[in-house]
Length: 337
Ligand code: ATP
Image (cartoon, rainbow, N blue to C red; front, side, top):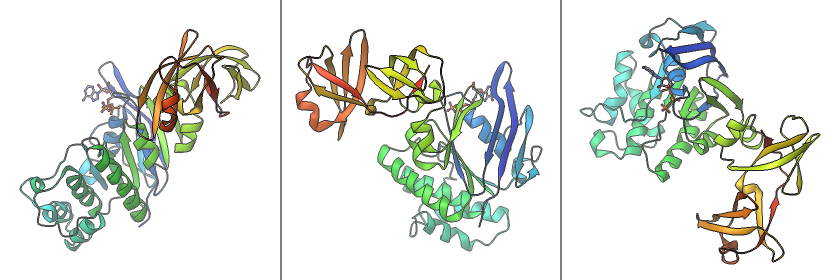
């Protein structure tokens, strides 16, 4: 099965004085998985609900496969959905839950067992939701959403209620299955790692608008705005000086993302771009260290500033509180504001 194209065209949605969506344009290519990423309240869920037909747009259009479905009721839209809260029927077993949508469409029930196998739950057909783990319940919900062979798959924070390990496993599984079946997919999340890991393209939203829509690598390496940079985990804000297409930060000249007038700026630098090495002649001092596993975070005070560096944990023994250190910055392009 090949997916269909989806266009959200100038979508607006107001709730009283709140502009939940403010002229949102978004095109999803056939078979593509787009993750909408953004802080709470930025309008991600509203966009997904309008695409599903569960919410009305104040203005704008929804096109699926070239057809304007803006006024089509949700029940007539060909979409599969998975939400954060397990939405299985508690009195139906896994197979019956998946069969539910097939019955409504008078489709063959045979697909139910096939779909449970696809999501790795072969042999669990007779289990009731309360006999399944959270991750397994979400797999059933995914099987149910895909069983009807929807034109579009909508996933609204489907992994948020799961613990970290299951979340990563199921994320990879969703990606594998989505690629296999080729369904055009919108995935809503507030978790940047999840969005970058799962999507073909990531749409970063702020206050009802798209700030950037680009591949995960592009969003990560060349965030279009300071907001995007902040949201994808760039936590150092350091003084810099722009000259032409470069910016000097802590004595290192770095390439600039975009263009900016010459002069003083704030540069946004990723912790993993900062290197730390003991240097008795340096005025910078280690303030705190925190062990995170294979990598650790080191906070260094330099003049009036704090710089967070992410370093291999093996380097930690020589980076105790008060150690004078020299900071280096990797020559990656940086965003300034
Ligand atoms: P979250 O991650 O918290 O779900 P979100 O990015 O999905 O956030 P939305 O749920 O789309 O955001 O909400 C966008 C804005 O619209 C918020 O300010 C929210 O309070 C408001 N909003 C959403 N639904 C309604 C509603 N039914 N009535 C009033 N305001 C609403």
